Length: 194
Image (cartoon, rainbow, N blue to C red; front, top):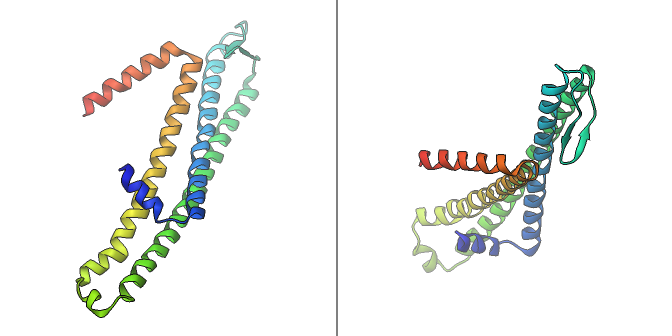
């Protein structure tokens, strides 16, 4: 797979490669909003679970920070804020996916045009060596597989992998034992599914 990725990136100009890397990096960094939202959900659950029923409960500490006592109105505002974080992340993710997909489509179209020009500007004898299906595959199918398929899959793999690492690191920072138990649980599920 790495050879295919290198080959596909090799067909792109340096500027196109830079734009691709920037799109993927921004998409991966947008995962920080997911982590922030997850932490806020944890804060919300901890506050709601301890402070609502017991007015004498001590303030909750998360990563060494004491969370002040919140009343019902503040909890509602916290819920709205959590929803806003996830909504902003969703809008950013959709916008970046659209931008990346459009960019890859332009790159694919440009390379398909190069292939078509190469084939059609060859001598008649060279063109006759290829069947209609070969030419069609070279111009449409191969570029679609190389660019749309491979580059979109690669960007998804990178962004979701970064999100997994960010969420895992957050769980480890908050509670290493719980993170280990959760990891073992999901590892068992993955093995059973296989």
